[in-house]
Image: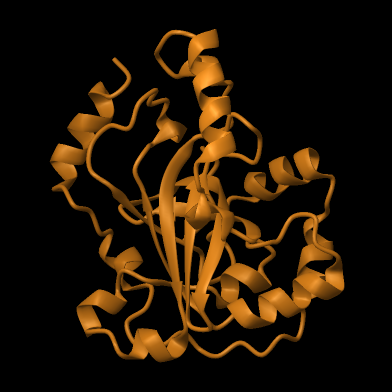
Length: 239
């Protein structure tokens, strides 16, 4: 599949979200809550990853996603997915990451919903912003043979100002030519990090062939809605 050229920069200012500006009263209440309440689950987030993905039912829609992740054990990671890495970033999805061992234990139909990370990492798509190269290489060594299941709940790339419609399954490239080159160029300009440096950091990491039916949803153009319904909803989401 050839690369496409309609990638959207999904970073938008907070003013694009409908609603009144946060009041002083609400700010004060939040400050008080922050002082006395426990935030144990989110305090377990220890890793920031940035990667590209596209909609399983429309590979031409390619976006940059920021994952804030917590390892539950050596075989399973859970991530909150945002549209950026700034203080006003919107929570737009989730990703679960599992080891080869766990993927192999899943039914064949379930495996199709999970994408492989081998080419994703080796292509320079999936990176750990800010980590020194040595530390990032070891992190990627642990990730390269894992599998992700990503759902986007808020399609900000098409201009939705609120979460509209059903969750969308996301997939990643598994061979050259599937990524839109503009994804890399945009990220390079924002982060000041060349893709060649990311590729060099992970070069030579042992990558196993994708397991079982992983990545199968990409070929099937998986969707929770019939294609006609998805197209109709997309046309009215921003009206």
